[in-house]
Length: 281
Ligand SMILES: Nc1ncnc2c1ncn2[C@@H]1O[C@H](COP(=O)(O)OP(=O)(O)OP(=O)(O)O)[C@@H](O)[C@H]1O
Image (tube, rainbow, N blue to C red; front, side):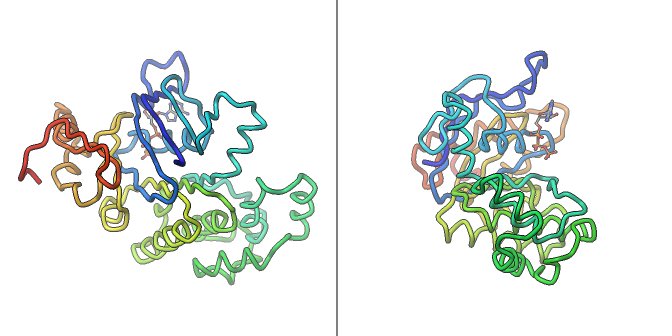
């Protein structure tokens, strides 16, 4: 199992009245691909950061790669972090850096300090960076400066980093936000092929709900820090989506969707419908 969360809550500071994540129970198997959807502020980024061991839960139980990361020493936890890759929503690419160097930074967790410093001046494996960029049609940018790239090119450059990493869990936060619809589909396809090829888990937050439903076998809907549904895509109805994004003041629809939804694993295991009205969907 890549990740197992049970009753996990996360708060950014003890003084804050609200949790960013509340009572999250979720299991993600090795090789599984799932999309996180939900309105702005739902907790998608916080969940990805929690999975990436960047943020510790306030309570609940959390296991990554069958270990309890927050019970380990920081050196051991660093070892676990080398097994996963987080592609953040806003890629932290140094503007004056060459693309080749920025892409090869995906190897940093596996390099010694000396290797990392040497690679800053003489890229360690430019062929790997070229091949990764080629999958996003960016091979001609290999020696361009990062600040000479368009927003969409920067986004794909950051994802090329993921391709050169050796991670077993790929955590990707809104990878398509700067891409046109054609590039968005192609990019998603590269990410999914890569995850399948290395049997890595892929957890991807998306605002493009239709792409999520078309491409991911499992969809997790988050709202106000809680999982509203966790279901195979065939069981995610338009009504559940509408309720997830409902902006009405009463806010009752999301609760209804949660009550109606199957809450289950990707293959239907552990299906425990809190309330299921046949024919609703
Ligand atoms: N650094 C922070 N300090 C305090 N609160 C934060 C911080 N980052 C996020 N939050 C809060 O945590 C909650 C979840 O935010 P998060 O960024 O995880 O949502 P999201 O679903 O990724 O949103 P979006 O789709 O807009 O990126 C929100 O209420 C947000 O205001």
